[in-house]
Image 1 (spheres, rainbow, N blue to C red):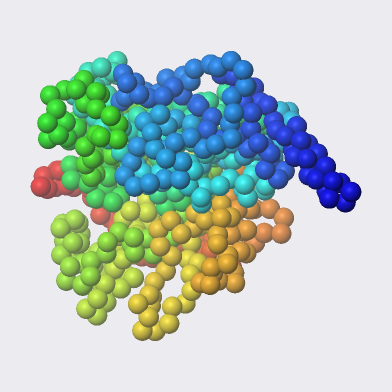
Image 2 (cartoon, rainbow, N blue to C red; image 1 turned 90 degrees about the horizontal axis):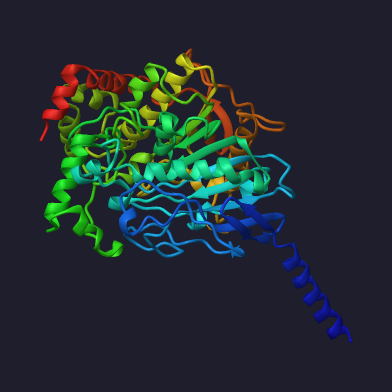
Length: 519
């Protein structure tokens, strides 16, 4: 009898859980999600039509309507890319996922929208670190959106530009993000979300995309806050790109796309559209957003100087040892040669500002790679908004790592690129023997600050260490995540000023001519 009672309770519990599975109606039809704890979760929700066949290398089109109830209980396949991802890969990849704490469609919960990184060549919403559960439980609707990457997301070509009424091509991945945000604006109220309180956030390429969406007229009004982790895109374009100076002009991107098609042995885009997506020839470095005059109108620094951007509060920062992840040179001689090759007449000043050390490449030298790609981009963005905008800026520096012992291979190392993501999402493996005692506290603090920012446009809240708004006047107005959340000055401020001189020169006619004459 006892066994029967337990079995009956189990059956009734399962039936009760099933009865709670939410049916939510969006513009295209009815979705059936799942209950996970106290959240309603919807996975694999189409926000655009599959970009296949004649829609390859086209702007995303509206998703088709369906009849009946569509199951939304599995992640959709991620975009075509090298390597493997948890949910598999497909050209049919334009789906999003929703974790919501709302119990009704009338709640108007703030919305936090994740844009993954991966150098615009990789990434997927199904990655384990991007599970939205912990953030949603802090009182936001968490949405993660997919976008095309690699040559399917960013191939520019004269034929593709000729097909387009605006005579542009290449930024399909950016258009996917915008289409996802448009879908959220239209449908998120059905999940209890507030369509007028949306914050976008992303890391690496996702953080760069956040900055580009902040300057894109096509994204105006689709979000009210922006968070960038190791992102920003404020360096000028150049023919041969480097981290921090990645942007290509449309004509250069079209020329690169034409060389790609011809080099692969195809006569036309029409022929290339017949090739299966997973059989397309790969090419490194082709995929990156393009200054096309419409989606990305111009050099973002110039746009911000002119006040041509989408005004929102921003929360921006980067990690202490980003340079570890970018194949740092092994010797001081290699480092100096690389600096001279990239920075021209500013090389000597930058080597002094970022010295290599005694015969080896120490963190001070790696910091030049960090700051060129992320530190200066973040600092410049913060300064532009703080001096030209009306919104608040919150600036952080992530430096959570063990104190590596002298003589250790990791002696002097800081926090590498991407390390903070698991802290923000609360997906840390705290059982890891290398985990720090303070990891859980730092993770909880970051998740709380990020969700507070989504709720209030300000990360501060009850019980949290005060995070002052950033000001160019200086002082301790940067939040450090290093064993505890605490404030400090802008890291490497004097070195950043030398890098600022380089970027200022690069935007001059002389600097532009020099950079674009390099072969």
